[in-house]
Length: 72
View 1: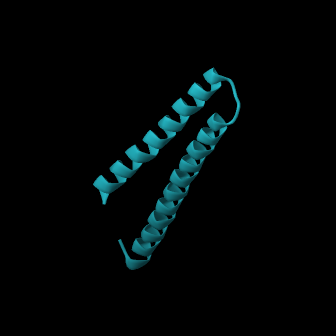
View 2: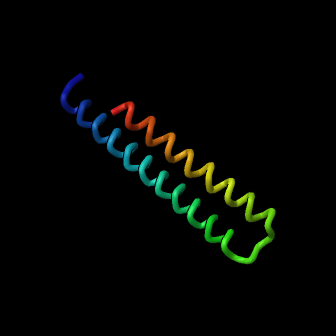
View 3: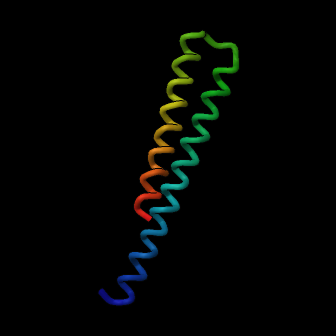
């Protein structure tokens, strides 16, 4: 593997890492928004569903971060 290929791989890796971080941020914001919806005056069943989805989103981010730490 020559230097140019290494640079291209490093660049690609950096892009993938940035995209991964952006997706985690979006998931976190989605969870925050769902919690905001729960605070509004909506049906109790819908509140429970929204909180469950928010928890799953946060768990997905946490699992992804744990996996990222193991690969570094």
